[in-house]
Every structure is written in structure tokens, then in C-alpha cells.
Image 1: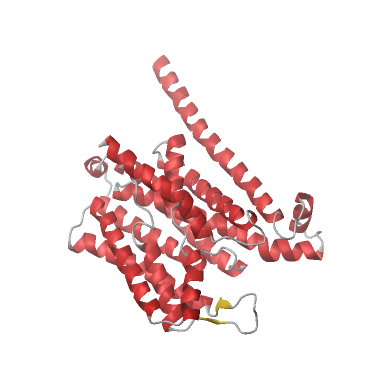
Image 2: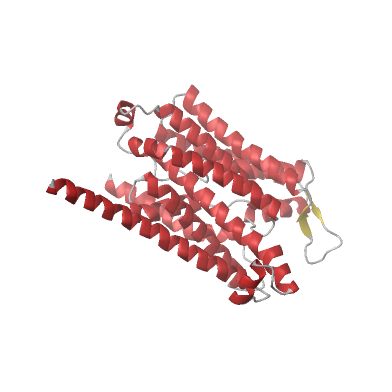
Length: 356
């Protein structure tokens, strides 16, 4: 009886520690979100932000907070969360710590789709009426649709390779790297025959931009996040079983292949929607899960939600840095995440090699 009570006490302590991590992350995310909403070319105080939220703010604050900054901050939170949770489940089902949307070709597939929309279907032109914004994407719906189809297409190719050619879980990541190179080469080839304005529009899109979404797009991204998060949490015990190996998972009644393919499909669907609206943002899906594993381990009951909050925190922090470091100039968010994510990617790679 004493042993059972001690085990229960240890388990409760184990759970409380992980819940505490989640609570701390949520509090940090809330504080950063308020900070990001208030900072910029037009400063808004914290009290004015909350007055605006309850409809008692000044008209200027209403325009700045509700019209501009809340959609941007919400987009950063949702996209960061999507990239993080899709990264963590991809790493689980593929048994590869380097798996994410950016390493499996999904992001490059989306970039290829956007390139086709901008150049082939002329969705990027020169804006003669505005010298401040000489290059613009004139049909964001078409660009988003083509980017989404490109991301989904990349995933279909990856899954087809695994089904037809029986490429192993480790081989899928290598196939994703090769597919990324193919999409990148195809995009470059299309740009070679385009004019300067179209190429500039493609480059602008691939920089990544969190400020181009309205609340309509935010709701679509929210729906993608909610659907993916619910699906992944429903399968949290399956991911836990798969952590102990395929044979163990099968002995527990887990259909490993079904879980792998369905998880890949849902992850690619959510990632493609996010990337199609904001452009290429790399490494969030790689960094957030690895950081959080150090605090909550590989228990997916906790790893999925804490990774979501950590991904949101990382992307919102990177966007705040990009907006404020040399304000009023806004640095490309994709470059900021790559500067941070590149060294982490190398660290994970060499750490894995050292263990072997």
C-alpha cells in the first residue's frame, strides 16, 4: 500500500510539473502578445489596449489595435502553434528528430505553388499608384490557393513514395530533402523567364509576412489549427505507444501505418494552409518540440500542447524582434527564424551523430 501511495504521489508530482510548464508558457505568451500589440510606430499603452478590447478605447487605438495589430499577433500565434505541433507529430511518426514541414518539402512545395501563381497567372505586378509599395501581390487568394496545392502535392508525393517504393521512416526525410531541392530548382527555373517585377513579388512572398492577413484569414488559420490539434490530441496515446517502437505499438493494438499516414496528411494540410497565407517560415516546427522535450519529456499528452504554446511564443517573439529592432523598417520574419533555426538544426544533427 505504501509503495502504491508513493507511486501515485510521484505521478501526481510528474503531472504537476508539466502542467506548471504549460501555465508558465501561456502566461509568457499572453504577456508577449500584449507587449506586441502595444509596440510599434504608434505606441498604445496597456490600459488603452484593454479599454479598446471592451469597446471604450479611442478611435485611433481601435484602428491600430483591432485593425492592424491583433490580426498580426493572432496570426503569429496560430501559425507558430501549427508549425510546432505538426513538427512534433512528424518527428514522432517518422522516428526522426529532424522531421518538420521545412525538411519534408511541404514549405518548398508551397513556395513552388506561389511562384506559379505570381508568374504564370500574373498575381504579382507593379503598383504604379504607390511608390511606397511598388511591388504587390494583387491576387492573394490565388497565391494562397496555389501555395496550398503545392504543399499538399509535396505531401502526396512523399506518402506515395513510402507506399509504392516502401521507403522507410528515415528515408522519408531524405526524400523530403530531395523533393525540396526539386521544387526549389523548378521555382528558380520559372523565375529565370519572368520579368523583374514578378521575380520581386516572388521574393517578397518567400520572405514571410505576418501582416497581410485580415480576420477572415485568421479564422481560416484558426480552423486549421483547431482541427489538427484535436486530431493529434485524440491520437496522443498512439504516439506514446509508438515511442516504444513499432512492435510494441502493434502489440497494443495501434495501426502504425494508418496513424503515420493520417498524421502526415493532417499535418501537411494544416501546414499548407498556414504557409499559404504567410509565406515560408522555417525551423519553428523543429526548434519548439526539441526545447519542450527537455521540460516535459516524450509524453504527448503534454508535449503537443506545450509545443503549440512554445511555437506561438517563438514566432511571436521573432516577429516582435523583426518589427522593432530597426523600426519603422520590418525585417523579413523568415530570415529571423532561419538565423535562429539554422544553428539549432546543426546542433541536433551533430548531437545525433555524437550519440551514434
